[in-house]
Image: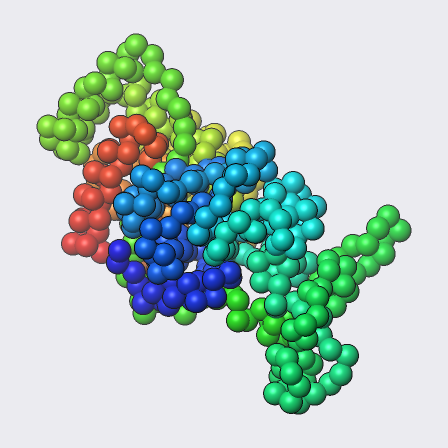
Length: 444
């Protein structure tokens, strides 16, 4: 397992605190750090991962890559909805990883109660049956501090012990002293939800109920949770990162094969095995139906993944595909929050689409057909790229990826190739990825 220095630090942090939150900015490899931390705390652990449904297959692939021996006997990966329906009711183990932990921000939600317990007190629910709990999210408080309470109460209750009603100089009173002079009473009970809201949120009575407007006393809250939370941003660890990285993203999906597509599948397997990507390029016109079916099979899971990334705080994302109807499926879902350049985009509209993506904060998604948008455009407002479909000419992918990796880019770039788990698409995308990466090393 090869980790960057900041990832080694992150893994050591999780292993040390036992129950904490890794809140690194998106794209910094939180899953790899959680796997490394798991290895540090136990040589042969029993592990459960709870994550959004669209990321289940990717977690299996991450363990295959970073710890292949574990997956065969002691790893379970379930979605939040599956856990809410009882998928891990009988589980007890060493490490529980909660990916995209902001899914548990609502203390009344069924999935939150299933994991944190009915009262979010950690004495029941899934967290009570784990020796270590690693929470991962790039956006721990999407709206206000109240959304942190379920995690703090259940996983790190020491951070919200009731403060003593006396003021004291730090270190003068038995307890954990804050710089402000307040003291956390280690013998007191953790703050319940509404006392937490009263202390750390500004509220408003709307006549129909209490509305949380914003946070308050944030320096105190930050100091309380600091021992249990680690967050790094991309610009803080740029010295550790290469300017551009390439990776895969495993997605669930089912291909419904026609007789013709089944015949094409056999041709693709033979070509890939005999000549790799070059073999695929040679038969591309003869497997057109298979390519289209494969691309469309990834749309649903890719849509969920994109939505989760954007809702979780990713500012901008560039999505490339081979087929126009794959891009159109994303356009229908995300409505006005995208810009698109496809083969039928008029020349005068191309720059308008680029300007919209580059300059409008609410335009978070750029949809590009590889042949039409893979050259000549500058898309440096984003540093993340997803190939839902790739070109079987790897240099086309490299050129397309360079739309974000250009002059004006201030962040390290991450390029992912989506692959349909359990299908030939896994083999194809891995082969394309290797070739694309080699080309990028030569010419980037």
